[in-house]
Amino acid sequence: MKSIFYPANERGTSDHGWLKANFSFSFASYYNPDKVQFGALRVLNDDIIAEGMGFGAHPHDNMEIITIPLSGALEHKDSMGNTGVIHAGEVQVMSAGTGVQHSEYNHSKTEAANTLQIWLFPRERNVEPRYDQKSFTNAFKQNELTTLISPEKNGDALWINQDATFAMGAFDAAQTINYNISRPENGAYIFVLEGSVKINDQILNKKDALGVYDTSSIVIDTQESTRLLIIDVPML
Image 1 (cartoon, rainbow, N blue to C red):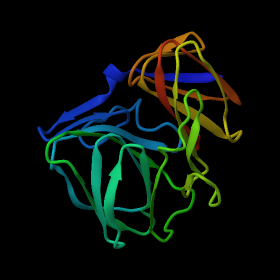
Image 2 (cartoon, rainbow, N blue to C red; image 1 turned 60 degrees about the vertical axis):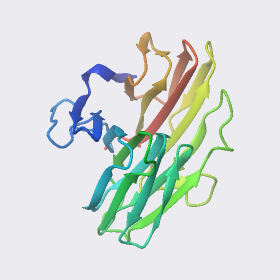
Image 3 (tube, rainbow, N blue to C red; image 1 turned 135 degrees about the horizontal axis):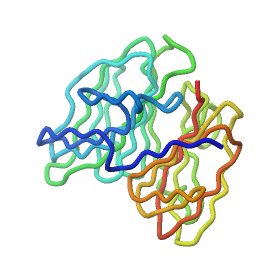
């Protein structure tokens, strides 16, 4: 097994007043040649968006874009005619494909929103753009991983145009999570949202991450009450 440690305090940062962003990978004005991507995972931005503020209409193409609100809610509008609000406990996916424009704003006028925006390189380029969102609030169970995203069109998870799987869960202290990587060519990026875990003698605290590859499985031991996200992606 090979691994890459991504400490939270080494992430790129940007403070625009209304937007405070942390970049796990090179993005915008932040560039680190050692942190450009992890396999098909190209962007993981941990954004805090001030009340009533957000991103105006802007274009994307040939990227799988996943938005996961950790707290608060975002208003979404796109050139495909989709409008709506995505809340914490929900997940949004957008296959940009041949091209799409969208905007997103903090839905609240009184509280900041914390969201993850994640980009994956697609399996196929120039597909027809597509949008979907789903609530997983009733699917989450303590001490279990819930699959949020998969490459399969039929199932309880959202699907994307990539051989990738996203799983999230909240765990008590002293739990052992045995995670099997979905495909031989994939690796896994473990991102700690809250708490602390141990993987192969490496301690990960809040917002730390570990990229693991050249293995078929991972053992994760929680050190305290923990919430984590596992992004299982082709290593390209």
